[in-house]
Image (cartoon, rainbow, N blue to C red):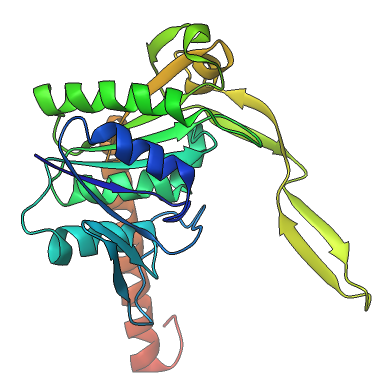
Length: 270
């Protein structure tokens, strides 16, 4: 059984090392990861420069690209056969709520799902130090279940582990994505020459969508497991928008008629 491991923290992150070591108990681990940290690159794909792939050791490769690049190269060029599962992580820091839209870790798992491979993203809460051994323990448990039971179509799993020792984990909770809010999300400063520059930063000050929320699970010491679908269509409002469609179409038709009249006469009216 082949397992593809990648991340967005780079090939030298202790998180990917801990994850690969733990998953080796399940199957043959292949690592294809970025050459440096690629945090918050989301689902970026490298289109405007060549990608370089280097083999560091048997079944371990480094790429000068994004996590999504790594998954594509691994599945389409590197591995002799598709893996049974793609596991991305272990990320330094949680990926909760809206963070999944920016996360390279989650995007790598999303790309695996797009390519038809069951995929899991794993992130570990922490600040300066991270309990990757704890995170790896839960990653292995989730991966075993996914391999045994599969995942629904177009669905990936986002796993977040609280910053607690194994004995301090409260349990496991299935969660929904939260919505985060920041204080002062863009910081403006002056350089030594008096020119303005900006940091996209800020401090998270509140969360919403509290029912079964992933952030709440982490705060209470639970491992958070969130199923995420590729299809982000808001199906409940499709009928409302279908009513809009005829209004929009009529408006376009009127505009076209008016432009045609102007073209014939040079003005509107009799």
